[in-house]
Length: 377
Ligand SMILES: O=c1[nH]cnc2cc3nc(NCc4cccs4)[nH]c3cc12
Ligand SMILES: [Zn+2]
Image 1 (cartoon, rainbow, N blue to C red):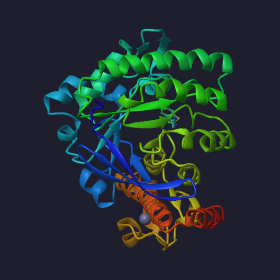
Image 2: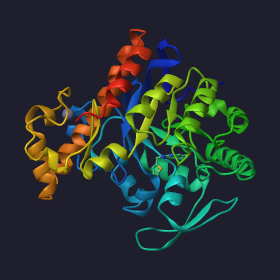
Image 3: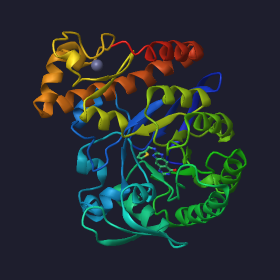
């Protein structure tokens, strides 16, 4: 008989292809659409768990590659797993590490067995395999475990992608076999196929053979340098073909306009390092587009970062002050910009959810895009 999956999804409302729903995971419920802040090394950089909760974070991401290299998944397990180690008591999704090996590791070699690489920290040699990736994620104790996949470089040829999909499918079978806690940690599939509709079908069809093992489906292989219109075309094609009764997760997307396009195609979950990374460098999201706070024009500007934002930062600090903090290299500047950027994306998803529930998502999206493209700051 079909075993009960540890992560389940309830579709609550559709507005076009856009969906509002609720994910139930071992560490709590998640209202979707949802943005997932990235906590690479067991911390969402510069934020405390208390601050993350206060801005409405429902689920965060941990990186298997980083935590395996440092401090080691065995040590995290000794502390009772990642939730206890970092004092985050809501859901956590861990990625599988394959993508980070290629975006961070060096001297990589990909074989049927897995991926050989040298650590970006100390150059030590390692091999990550489907089994090893799943066992690390079992040690971390995340609510959602990602398959170990290959994300072909952006704009790879069909000749490269076809065999890559077939190996990723063989790896998927090995991940399902290796999973030690299928009743406690939900396993998500990752659909590949580049920018080719027929290869997206191929990947999804091969993974669907194992559907009973999957709590959700991720769309991989995007936001890796392909033209925006290709990403949108593929999303519009493949997302609605994923099972309607399971969450759909778009990996690596965190630009406001891309997020709304993804929601419109039927995506429920997204993650991206952008809001925290650009925040630390002084770029913030506002209703009217991005704003680079170190720009001299803001030196005497007594407006909040975003006059339409009701976050703690926008209610208490002016652009001139935050610019000063960045110019003086005061770490509070990085914290305030990060806090606001995360709040901005979390609120965008909350507003998108409300628009879907009221069946006016298209209007909501068009209005946001009109303002965001004004660029008047
Ligand atoms: O197919 C994928 N498989 C597993 N992890 C991913 C993470 C991903 N992150 C991005 N884009 C955001 C980026 C982050 C750093 C460089 S690009 N695209 C991604 C694709 C994948
Ligand atoms: Zn704000």
